[in-house]
Image (cartoon, rainbow, N blue to C red; front, top):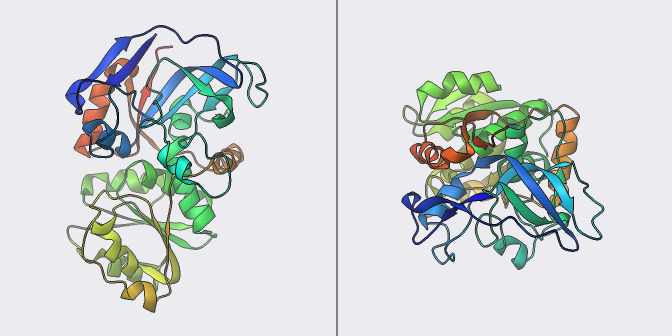
Length: 338
């Protein structure tokens, strides 16, 4: 079978396709999954460049997100069966409840080998069956970005019909957040730098778009649009955008802090947090039970994440290059040959 690895040194130029032996028969508690699609997250780019975890041991197999079909199981496996279409979880040992240090440290596509391979062997306890109504690309986009968006809006934000949500940009988490928020009956405002993406965002269900170039103080513009502040901010920018997010959110609203696309260190006033009683909550993807709750909602009709460009498994470097350009909208996916 074939798998992609980052070998010798960090950098996309060191991403290589290699032929390796097929996995042995699954051991007790294990399942062998033949992959059908994969999706890329910004974390995967940082990991490949050595910017996320420069101490990561090389070579490593990238990507946390993918979907496949179970083709063999080991002794004692009951939660999945041969023929099931499944995804792995981002944190393989985090099944429910609060995370521990091991759960947040041992993540797939980094310290734990990734899934950018034709066949993977996994602990069956981490696998989640995905709804039949989703395409392979849609299902592959769930484990990291969609679970994160679900937890930000539903678990943490407790978003209700008629409320408002703010998303930043049009990447994986933000596109999933739009789909989930609209399915909750909420209105969505998006902030971004790329006017050519406005039509795409509105096609997803975004009601209002604010240019962060034309409106550097976009938090105030979002607050005015929403009539006093949005209920939930899906904050993927980090320190570089957090001040504006705190300005955008309503009194006693929620800012779900997820990423650091705009930087991790910036001067920040905490006065809005205090004076508006804002709830700032860090969201670290989620556990298996959250993933299962998302899948139940998707099976019942919640919109799946928007898919952007799709590439063949053999074209992984091109997909990474598109991710690095920042010009995409929605999830970037890879698909296996049928």
